[in-house]
Length: 374
Figure 1 (cartoon, rainbow, N blue to C red):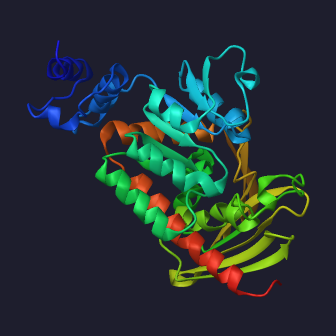
Figure 2: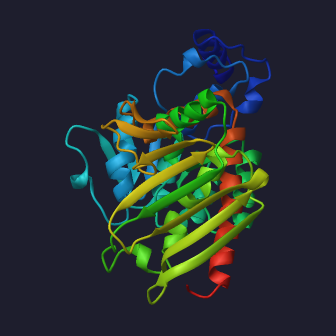
């Protein structure tokens, strides 16, 4: 059976029509792995039916980071993944779960050549995100990048363009936005017939270990990089437009990087988002959403736990009550959204979120770094 016949057979099984020119969508395979990857790309036929997506796409994790071990791999397992590939320069398979198959590579380039995964998740230090996202896209993979994705808007635009030319999905993993607490908070305001006016955010935690990459410039450390995505994304989620102005101030620094900052983003119609972020205090992770006669407070907003319920405290003029949001894994929900985007070839949402946040984060960093330390 040739590839065209395989394509039509897969199409019949998955409830989509395969065009007679489907071969144009397939790379000429140079190996069995490439042939398998080419067939997998039939997920992108425009006549896709979601019933075809029965299992998560296979993922190669570049960098065996803490977030990869604690959240990425467990989320993929929740979705039904039976294995994952991992490339690590320093860690071994002995650190992987005993009951879950992980194929380890000790070299990133070798992993990109040998894996049968369809998606690469880049979880290196921040300064290496762009290099390995570029290599993965050039090798024909769909790509997810840990937040913050890339250091500049120019590089973000370049890599989005590369992904679009290669018909691949590029996304940034700012995953808290996919937790049901966000939709629940929006509904509270919708039912009250009002809209949020102010957002007050705080995400701060105790100092990290002295050798942690966040303390150093070269690997892309600093509070503005590490926590900046949490500072600028609530405005996108609850106001739906780009800020007209962003003001940032560094509150503290170490020998190389900023360790805490405050910000204010001004939006249309008198709305604003403000907050303080850093790694110099006790743990605080909270968002207050304020509107006319209504305040919604969410604790652990930016890192919702996957196995515990979330509580929204709702303050109205005549009462205070709470809403329980059942446990949900925000990483798993992000992956579900991403896999559906790949399957339907609709990458617009991923591109919009990545570029909107890149523009805002660059403005925040530019303002903060140009100003004296408070």
